[in-house]
Amino acid sequence: MTTNPQRIAFVGGGNMARSLIGGLVRHGADPAALAVAEPNADLRDALARDFGLSVHADNGEAACGAGVVLLAVKPQVMQPVCTALAPTLAHKPLVISIAAGVRIDQIDAWCGGGLAVVRAMPNTPALIGAGATGLCANARVGDAERAAAERILGAAGLTVWVEREDLMDVVTAISGSAPAYFFLLVEALEAAAVAHGLPADAARALATQTALGAGRMLREDGETPARLRERVTSPNGTTQAALDAFAAGGFRDLVANAVDAATRRGRELSAGSGG
Ligand SMILES: NC(=O)c1ccc[n+]([C@@H]2O[C@H](COP(=O)([O-])OP(=O)(O)OC[C@H]3O[C@@H](n4cnc5c(N)ncnc54)[C@H](OP(=O)(O)O)[C@@H]3O)[C@@H](O)[C@H]2O)c1
Image 1: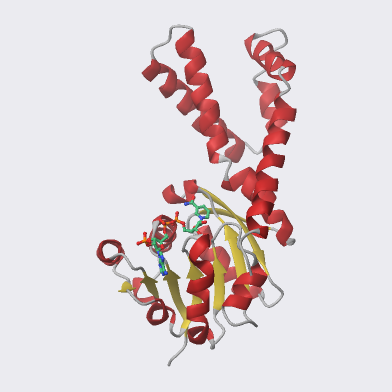
Image 2: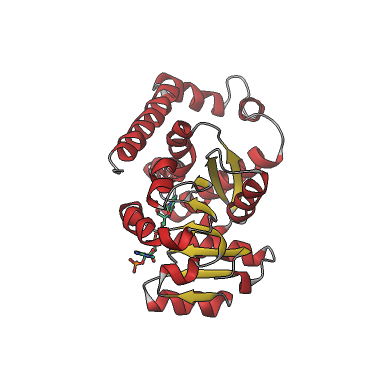
């Protein structure tokens, strides 16, 4: 077996793998250095057609000799997938897992032990190249492996390292699950506007574009969220009236409770994932 440190093998060729592969290719990665293992023949054919990478029905065949093996299967099949791959990983590639709730020590043990492992938590906007991914590494991950992980996950958006793995549950709560919180806010704004008589399509278009505009200002303006909020809030104006209503309803406590609940649930799922 020849080892090629540049080769990246994806195990599981579903939505997330597709978005990461697409991001890498758009950022100039050589498709010849990418491989994917996927049981579904239609998905394999589509990946080969769209990106020109090598596709395999067998996980070991894809991972054989790769410098990076990225595990993109569902959490519930991680253990059998890793255990079956372990003999193929004897050359100790960097292993990156994006499986929600599966711990680094579990992945390392299932893959044979002694491996450099990065655990990543991307979110669904990665599917359109606007993801936010928390990354956490074990002690075997050096600077070169960190850079490789950042390049791969960074192809689908922003990456942030966290040093303590237990904080990955908070990462899940404020980025992994959080697109749904923003969708909920847009839904609620739309419903409130419709209740006031605005047509639904106009309400959705305005609320959606406002979410996008606010997000872009947060990224591009350089100001803190608090300062941006203050800048659109004139004393006794309409925004102030709405913010007062949010405060009276306990908005900040509600958000804190929601983040607590998601963090707790992440911990429970991690604890229950076996190993
Ligand atoms: N989607 C998200 O927003 C998101 C966010 C953060 C983390 N994640 C994590 O990313 C991982 C992948 O999620 P996804 O949304 O991309 O799921 P997905 O679309 O279902 O992709 C998983 C792929 O793995 C394939 N697969 C199943 N068993 C396999 C095996 N034994 N060997 C190789 N491939 C196998 C599946 O094929 P079949 O369909 O034929 O079974 C499927 O195509 C999950 O662990 C999830 O927790 C996802």
